[in-house]
Each structure stands twice: as structure tokens, then as C-alpha cells.
Image (tube, rainbow, N blue to C red):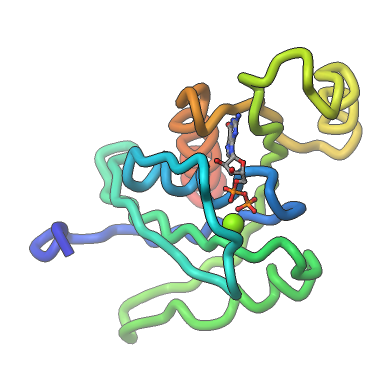
Length: 156
Ligand code: GDP
Ligand code: MG
């Protein structure tokens, strides 16, 4: 770990859920390592990556879980709630925030979902919404940072 000596104030978990091939793994690769692979292999099971960043002068470690896309939403969220307490001084706070992401926005006219439909859905369901492109880096940082910052302000 590069952050060996770093004091971590918060660990936030993010779980990427969605149909396979929508770009979950590449969004994560782009955010965590600034990498992108056009021949991305299907994710088997679940894996996570971490990235530590600063929010409000606090060191926040984002632990981002990537899934194979077949998981049932509820099963996944409850599974990731478990664990997380490493020493008795830690406090586990449960809070949920949802961000709807429309990835591959660089594909323009090939889009599967009209932006108005996505916006309408997000408003109705009270979700944050962003269109991203892991390929072109569009809004990737912003989508993760918005999510993490919102979580931070919910619990502070
Ligand atoms: P996952 O199954 O949701 O994890 O999807 P992947 O991250 O494996 O991506 C599936 C395919 O879509 C791969 O070929 C990626 O290179 C491609 N892909 C991912 N993000 C984008 C994007 O923003 N734009 C375009 N054009 N292709 C993307
Ligand atoms: Mg994947």
C-alpha cells in the first residue's frame, strides 16, 4: 500500500451494480488507476479496489466493489454491509446513497437510454444521476467524488 503511514479517518464502501458489459469494471479501473481496457474481461465474482482521497481535510479511503452484474441488488448491498470493523475504536455507520450512472456517453447517438428518460427516472427515484465515459474520462472522477462527498456530508 502506498498509504502505509497515512491515518485513515473514514472508509466508505461503494458497490457497482448493473448489467454486464455496461462498463462497471472500466469505470473502476479509470477512477482507481486511471486505466482503461477496450478488451475488458467479464468480472468473475467480486473484487474491490481502494483509493484514498481527501474530503474536508479528512483522509477517506474508498473501497469500491466491482461485481459480475448478475447479483441481486438487495443480496449485494446486505453482503457488503458485513465486516468493516477492524479495531474496537472504529465505528460502523450504515447509510445508503444511490447514484445512477449512464456510462459510455461517448457513444453519442448509439445511446440505449435517452438522457431525458434517465433524468426523469432519477428524479422520480430520488437518485443522483450522471452520464460518464470510462473511455474518455468524462465525469468519472466527478461521479465517484460526488458520491463520496455526499456520503461524507450525510454522516457529518
Ligand atoms: P462490466 O461488465 O460492466 O464490468 O463492463 P466492462 O467494464 O467490462 O466493459 C464492457 C465493455 O465496454 C468493454 O469492452 C469496455 O472497454 C467497454 N467500455 C467501458 N466503458 C466504456 C465507455 O465509457 N465507452 C465505450 N465506448 N466503451 C466502454
Ligand atoms: Mg466487470
